[in-house]
Length: 50
Image 1: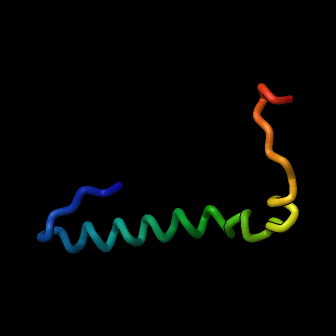
Image 2: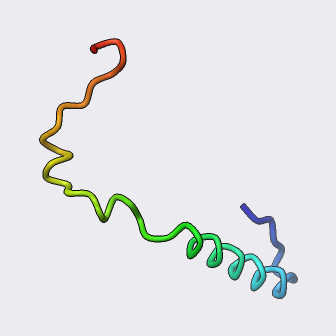
């Protein structure tokens, strides 16, 4: 999270570049690689239910 005022244009640019860099380092979303149909069919349980 970034705290910016309207007079801090350079700081805004830096914060956007920083966020962009962090997203790129994180890589692709692992949820996109999952087979959603299989995930929906799998019964989710809590530790108490097991």
